[in-house]
Length: 244
Image 1 (tube, rainbow, N blue to C red):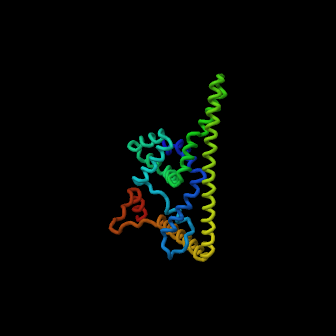
Image 2: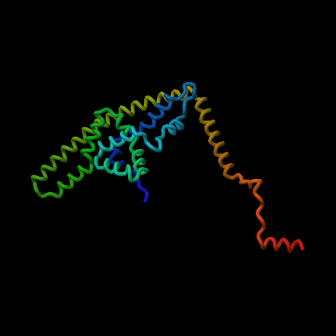
Image 3: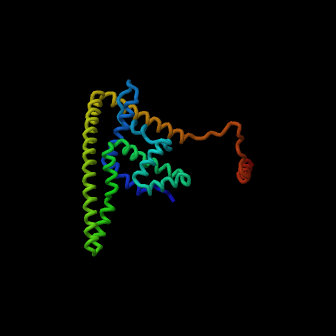
C-alpha cells in the first residue's frame, strides 16, 4: 500500500499557504539571481526554479523547523509524524518535504499575521459547522443560547483574522507587482541576451536527448576474445547434408 504524506495535515496547513505560498517561487528566483555571477545574462526563470528544488532528505535544521510548525498547528498530527521517524523513515521524510514550504512561508510572516492564522485554526469551519448543527439539534433554550453566543463569537474572531490576512495578501501582491514590473523592464533591456539564452538552452537539451537516444540504440559488440558459439546439433546435421 502506498502511503501519502498525512493529507489531513496538508489540508489544515493549506490555510496558512493560501494567498501567500504563491510568492515562494518568486522569492526563490530572486535568491538564485542574487547568487548568480554578475556577468551572466539574465535568467529566464526556469533554471532558477529547478535549482531551488528541495533536496531528497532535509537537513536537521529544516527537520526541526517543520516539526515545530506541525506541533504549533496540530499536536495530534505532530505526534503522528514523529511516530514514523523510526518505523517508516521514507514516509517521514516525504511528509517533511511536503510541509517544508509551508513552514518556511509561515516563518517569514509577520507575527500578527501568524497569530491571525492561528486564530483561524481555532475558529475553523469544522468547528463552526458543528456548533451550527448542535444548535439545530438541541431543544434546551439555555443550551441553544450558549451555543449561539459561542458560534457568533467564533465567527467574529474568524472575520477579524481574515481581515488581517487579506491586508497582508494585498501588500504581497503589490510588492510582487513591483518585482514583476522590474523584471519586465530588465528583460526588455536585455532582449537579445534572454532570447539567446533560451535558444541555446533548447539546442543543448535537444542535443543531450539525441545523444541519449543514440546510446540506447547502439548495438552491443561481442568482445574479440569471446569465441563464436558452436551451431546446434540439428543445424550441424543440416549443414553436413548440404555439403554432401
